[in-house]
Amino acid sequence: MLFLSISLINTKSNDKSSSPNNSIFNLKNPFLIGFFTNVLNPKAILFFISLFTVFVNQSTPIYIKIIYGIWMIFSTGLWFCIVSIFFTSDYSKKIINKYSVIISKIMGIILLIISIKVIL
Image (cartoon, rainbow, N blue to C red; front, side, top):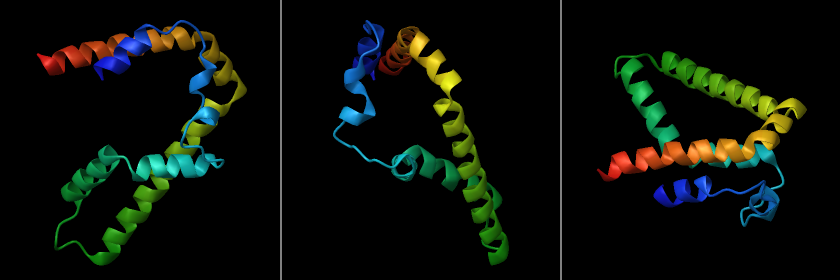
């Protein structure tokens, strides 16, 4: 995280070399990229496990467990669709491209602070 923060702080301009089209993991379908990102994300798995342990116990009927599962699939799917629509709109692309260097530097500073707190 420290290396990432330093490289973000040292961002000079819009670097197109790190675009998804040039990466090693190049999938044509954005849905698959999002799906694999979420399925392989250990934080998402831990989030759902911790959430279900609060609401579900052994005495919970199976149909309630199925309803919870369907609800979580629907709500997270809807959320990620809304996020993807927002970030792929022309307006947000213009804003992100215009301020990408500033966003990178701010994120670098935030990650640097987190790294220092973890180290100390």
